[in-house]
Amino acid sequence: KTNEIILAIETSCDETAAAVVKGGTELLSNVVATQMDIHQKFGGVVPEIASRHHIEQITLVIEQALDEAGMTMEDIDAVAVTEGPGLVGALLIGVNAAKSLAYAHDIPLIGVHHIAGHIYANRLEQEFRFPLLSLVVSGGHTELIYMRDHGDYEVIGETRDDAAGEAYDKVAKALALPYPGGPVIDRLAQDGDDLYNFPRAWLEKDSYDFSFSGLKTAVINKLNQLKQKDEEYRIEDLAASFQNSVIEVLVEKTYKATMDLDVKQLIVAGGVSANKGLRQALQDRFKHTDVELMIPPLYLCTDNAAMIGAAASIEYHKQHYKDLKLNANPGLML
Ligand code: KG4
Ligand code: ZN
Image 1 (cartoon, protein in one colour):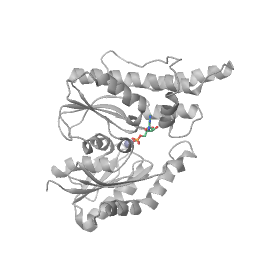
Image 2 (cartoon, protein in one colour):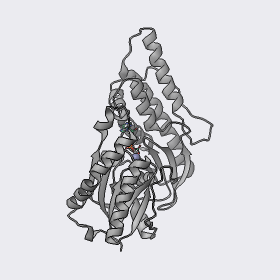
Image 3 (cartoon, rainbow, N blue to C red):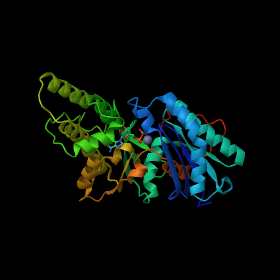
Image 4 (spheres, rainbow, N blue to C red):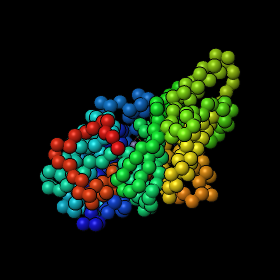
C-alpha cells in the first residue's frame, strides 16, 4: 500500500503525543499534550511525574488524534511508536499503548528512533534529496548526520559533553530563568549584545564534534564574577553572548560539513531548531550556496508524534515490523 495510514505515538520525554500520517508526507492530525507547566516548578523534567502524566493522557490523546483525522482504528494500517532514546518509564507508556493497539487490531507495529523522527519532521514539508546532511539539536542530542538514502544514518559528528539544548537549560537555570531555558534565552538574546565574547569550542581542526560544557562554565564563572564585584550587568547581554557562541560553532561546523560532503540539502531538526538566532544565522550562511536549507515550522521542531509517523513510513515500506516483544530502549542507537 503506497498511501498507508499510520497512527504514531511519542512519549519519550514530557509530551504525550499522537498523530495520524498518510504516506509518510501528509499530516492528518497531530495532538500534543505538554507537561511543561508541571515540570517547570521543579526546574526540569522529573521522570516519575512524566510517566504518571503519560498514563493519564495517552488514551485521550490517541482518541483525539483519530478523531481529528476523522478515523477509527479500522482505517489504520500500522501503529508506530518511539522506542528510544528517552526516559525509560516515559517510553514504556507509549510502547505498551502501541503494542496493545497493534495486537488488538492485528496490524503491524513499527519502532522508531526519536532522532529519526526529528529528521523526518521535515519530510512533512518537503521531499528529501540525497545525499543530505542533518543537524539535530535537541535537549538530549547534538549531532551531524549524513544520509545517502531513506533510513540510512551516518553520525559524522556529535557532542562530547552537553547537548545544545541541555546547555541552554543549564545556563538558564544558573541565570535563575524558568525551564525550559531555550526559548527564554532566545527571547532575551534578541535585546542583548555579545559583550562577553565567550569561548568557541572548535576542537580539532577537522572534527565535526561539538562541546558545550566549557561554554556553560564560562557563562557561570562570568556571572559569579559580575556579582562578586557588584558590577552592573544585563541578563540580556549574557544571553546574547552565550547564544552567539553556540550559534557560531553550530553554523560553521555544519557549513563546513555540507561543503566537504557536497550535499544537496541541509535538514535542521530538534527543539533548538526553534531558535530565532540559529534560524537566521543558517539562512544567512546558506543563502548563496547550492545547499537547500530545510528548517521545520515551530510546531514540528519540538517533540511531537507527526514526525514519528513520517519516519515510520520508511520502515513500513521496508516491512521492518516489530513483534510484541518490543521494549523501550533508553539508549537506542540510530
Ligand atoms: O527536541 P526537544 O523538544 O526534546 C528533546 O528531544 O530533547 O528539545 C527540547 C530542547 C530543550 O532543551 C529546550 O530548551 C530547547 O529544545 N529549545 C530551544 C528553543 N526552544 C526549545 N533552545 C533554544 N532556543 C529555542 N527557541
Ligand atoms: Zn526530541
